[in-house]
Image (spheres, helix red, strand yellow):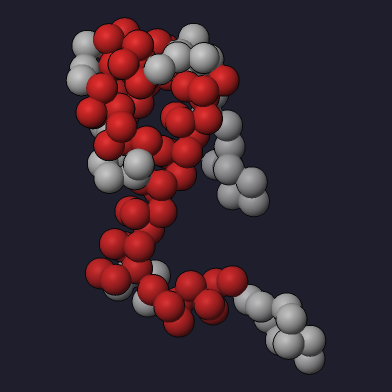
Length: 105
């Protein structure tokens, strides 16, 4: 994206500059950390909306409170199976939808 306005930034270029181009180990590490943070925020917000403590959620899925804490801090990224168990324990479900702008076959 080219613009004469210095306040408008191309985020893709900025990410590549700071964290490396797609396909590089540095970018893969950044992407993994970003997904862990995003996942942690979804689970934290949903747990709070459900008015559960970390201990209560942990008990519902058969885990330790510290495990929930590490997920919510983005320290660890739960497996897909654990993510679904947590979502179910929070009384929610996951809906899989086509990604915006992705052609379907």
